[in-house]
Amino acid sequence: MLDGRRIPVDAVEARVAALRHAPGGVSADARWKTEGPARRAVTELVLDAVVARAVADRGPAVAEAEVAAARAEEERRLGGAGRLARALAEQGVPAEAIDDRLGRELGIRRLAAAAGADADTPAGDAAVRRILAATATTFHLRVNPRYGTWDPDRAALAPAGRSRPTG
Image 1: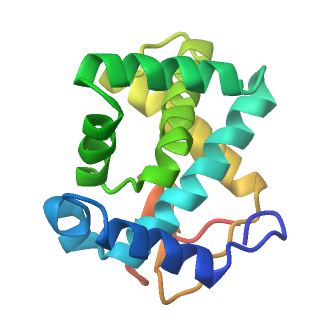
Image 2 (image 1 turned 180 degrees about the horizontal axis):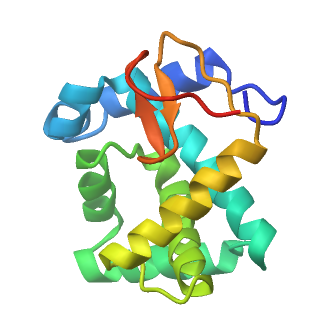
């Protein structure tokens, strides 16, 4: 639960199903093998919400136009929409979640900049993780134990019993 709002099981299952059918999807990324597709999908869904809240709490939200511009730039850089979709599927991002991922990446960059850091540096990554951990606690985050527990230090789900829960 995120602030009383549920992420339905069918949303998790839909994300996993989309990846299973994406070119180079679930089996291509080693993280899927170690984390499991359902836990990874829940992590992504929760992280999207936590980043969006953290950005909104600290300044303007990432606009759809910014996401569209980022997508156009990535498509140009990679040689088309299909190549972008394949590249992100290999990272565990189904085609219908590309804009969510790009918005999250823009949000993370915005959070790092607000903290006076570069998101691509260890210091920037640490600053963003601190912001996300603080934001996650305000969400009163609860995760179904079948998916694991929220690890605020990693900003990801860990297998049940391996991390301290938040909220």
